[in-house]
Image 1 (cartoon, rainbow, N blue to C red):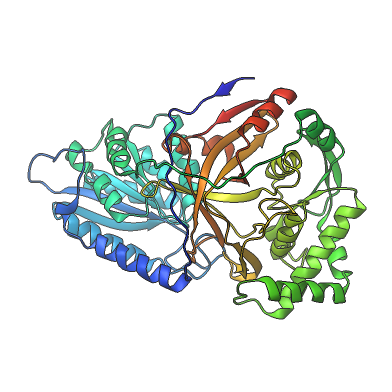
Image 2: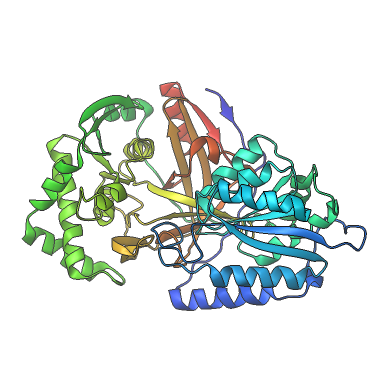
Length: 528
């Protein structure tokens, strides 16, 4: 088996978790960010040199987003007002760089970006700041092709998916005019903007990415060292894991079609229609569903914005999915949840149902993501029922953290018989509808994050220490903050070829994962 090792290994340091309230957290962070944004330029430190001459550099700021006020479900959430964010950013840049002329604008996609660039040729714009405000708007690609210096910035918990995927494509192609910033500290952005001075006026530039990298690396929090809580795992042998996976089954609910598909990592896979799940939901025992709701009310930390009627439909969906799993002799189900709900094919969000299934040692997975479901099933089987947490990660260099975010999470991360952690029930974040879970996951544990690709016969792997839970109201409800064990710069490099989802397990699974890969003839790639 071929093993690709990390560039370096960092020691990690424990950060004690503490209680929080969403209101206090957001208020304090907003105040800090605004103070930093309005700080004088003299606070900046950068490896980049000053430009020459007195001519003001012209920098176009391109906010890549759907609309100034978001009218559709997406990160960060429907109804989100970007206007104050953009205004504060424009003010901070103008105040800190009086020798620059900033030209703010917005673009939804490549057509609008092309029109802006055409006008910039007449205005002799020297460089660009592209702010990824929503995930998948393709603006930065058009800007990068100008050959002018481009600073690519993630508005975290808003544009992070597109940022990670698009930026890793630039890294893979060694696009040297595009530098990037992925930090919650505005000082790190301002330091990177200072790098425009290194190239001066005039347009085309090479090496801008490496100049920005110097500032990013210098401002990235140093690795710490940790004394971790003991977390022993009794894992199955690779042979026993393979045997059990062959007797398992994944049900995938993608659309209204039924078909059997090729196995994934030796796991049988069957597609079933929305109608089958919806029918099971409609026939769920109402008294049993009411009992599930009462249990949630007793055990949840809080229930915010979710009426009893929605809780009942969610409980019925859990019971319906469980009955479908039983009827098919399966132990995993993944549902095209938003497509089914918005299309009127299912009438309840499955988030709370997935939460319950994962707590019980079964698998409930989002978005009809078959490969993440297979990863959840394979390594849950290997660890005697530890559930995987599927997520959309965000990286924050200022804290040296990767934040695993999703609206579905278990609260029995050590397995069905293990300890529980607190959880809240809130609406699904992006559209503020339905019911989903914020799980306050345990800290001071090693975690192992994986993804699989059956075509490559490859397992993607990294590890991180769980440190905190972020209650930011933007994006998905559960946000586990962890410090990667290894090279955080390398962690930016593989999203374009692997996609955004990752699956996180509690515990150090390195030895059993590598042994399992050897047994099935796959390779393991370490992404950090």
